[in-house]
Each structure stands twice: as structure tokens, then as C-alpha cells.
Amino acid sequence: MDSLINAAGRALAAGDPLGALKRVALREDAPALALRGIAMAQLGDLAKAKVLLKSAARSFGPREAVARARCVVAEAEIALVSRDLGWPEKALRSARATLAAHGDRVNAAYAGSLEARRLILIGRLTRPSACSPASIRRRCRRSRASRMSSRPRALRSGA
Image 1 (cartoon, rainbow, N blue to C red):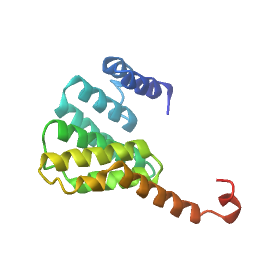
Image 2 (image 1 turned 180 degrees about the vertical axis):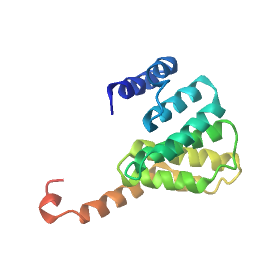
Image 3 (image 1 turned 90 degrees about the vertical axis):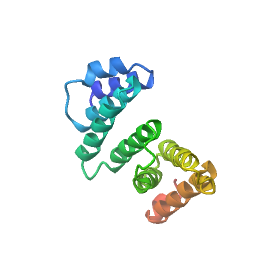
């Protein structure tokens, strides 16, 4: 990542979407599109944010599954905020699994909370336990265990 992308990400994390937009407004690469989408969502332009995030998800290459999954989670959040409850839950579930499998537990947990909130809003109160933090932690441990078992024996003892 280059310095402008990093600076835009820091600006978004600090709650400065305009500062982020100043840094990536004219760029068309996938990370810039994703950051612009998040900035637009923070500014309240949800339609533009959705378009930018979809474009960013399509632009990320096959080796950037985590970045694509993060875009899907951001799209799901926008759908939830705009009460678009028909958003495909399989995409969010798949994104959550991808994030958990790659060790991004914070975003995987956030995706789980979005799933739970959606289920509560549509009146399916029996399923949120599947999205609970304990359930997500179990899945993360299982995915870590499967990654560890596939490592060479010499590396297992050190990790």
C-alpha cells in the first residue's frame, strides 16, 4: 500500500471522511475505490458508497480475498443501515468465513454482528446465537487449528 492509501485509511479511522477523500478522490485503483466508498458512507451518500464498494470488490484481484470480503461487509452494513433487508446473506456469511480463515477476527466478528442484527430485524430471533462472539471464536480456533496442522512439523512447535 502506498502512503496516500495509508493516510486515507488513518483519516477514516479518525472520523475525517473529507480528509480521506482529499487523498484518494481522483484514483481509480481498488483500495482507493474502497476507501472512497467508506468515506461516502460516513458522509451519508449511501447510494454512491454502495456503487463504489461494489466496484472496489470487483477490482480486487484473486489473491486479495480479504480485501474483497471487507468490501462485502461494508456493503452489508450499508444495506442494513438503509434497511435493505433483502441483501444476500450468503455473501455476508462467505465474507465472514473468509475473514475468519485469514485471521481477521475483528472484521469477522463485525460481520457476525451484522448478520445477527439483520436476523433480529427480519424477526428470526432463533438464529443470532450462530453469530455470537463465542460461536465466531470457535470457528476462528478451528480454522487456526486446521492451518496449524497443515504446517511442517518444525514450524508447529514455534507457533
